[in-house]
Amino acid sequence: MRKGLYLLAALLLIAVIFTGCSKPAKQTGTLTLTFSIPQGTSEYPHFPLLETDRALSRDVGQRPIPSGTRYIDLAVYNETTNWSYETEISVNSGQTTASALVTNIPVGSGYTVEVIPANEYYVAIAMGRADDIVVTSGTNTSVTLTVNKFQINALSYPTTVPAYSLMDVSLSLYSPVSLYSFNIDHCCAVLTDNPTDLDNANGYGLFFDENYIPNFPSNSWVDLDFQDIAPDVAGTWYLYGVGLGYIQPVTDSYYDLVFAFDTFPTIEVTPVDTGGISIIIN
Image (tube, rainbow, N blue to C red; front, side, top):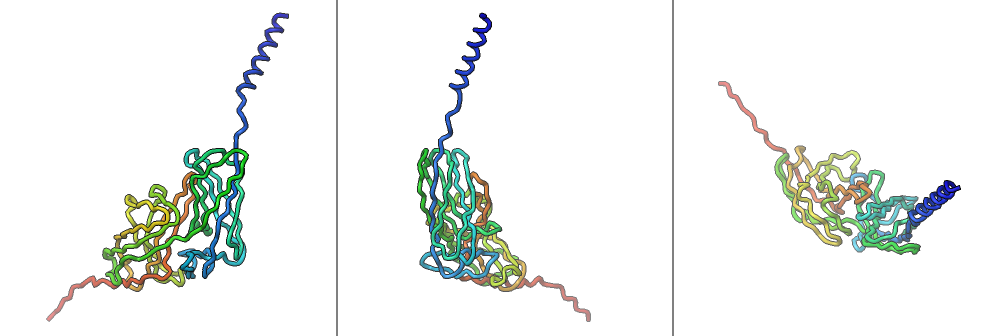
């Protein structure tokens, strides 16, 4: 009888312990995301190194979505907690706004939303971001942002340069969002010999020293000086733009962010006289 009472007491104690130690339900919230896709004068998105039409609307720096359905990459992440969520949003021709609903986000602060209209090769010429978002339990938080284009200006470049000689190109880059150097694995100015047929063109890169890649503050111009060797093939080359290798925080998704010229600066690469030995026999 006494053993039975001890056993019953032990079982009750175990039940109390497990009940007291059970974890409360994880608190989550919801984000309703709305972003604008301003219209431009040509299709959006057309991508450097893959497409040829780069006419842009100067006043808004955007392109409309072409006919049919396209997908835009959406990421929500938190660098403090290392939480992330990625998806694709379907958009159609003429659509000027898009929206998405992200549920089951852990309650907390410091969330970031990024919208990147990349192609199948993860090349993008535009981006949108909203930072410091707070997610609260049981509520729906609204976030609005705009997708804007990366921009570029040529400060100085040689119009003529001998093949395989040192050349200096100075460019100014404008990013609509902050890009930090520790999330950039390369920075390269791109030359091509045929900007109207990129699939059959030759390309050449002038690389910026990765140890000195700067931060790119949002809505600011940053000047870069590329000092590298000119192409070893003589002819007319066109300065296409600059590509940044962007590693998205937390998700580790990789994108080539391209700052493309509307009109390509021209650089003539001249042949180098290699010299020779003349032997004259009398």
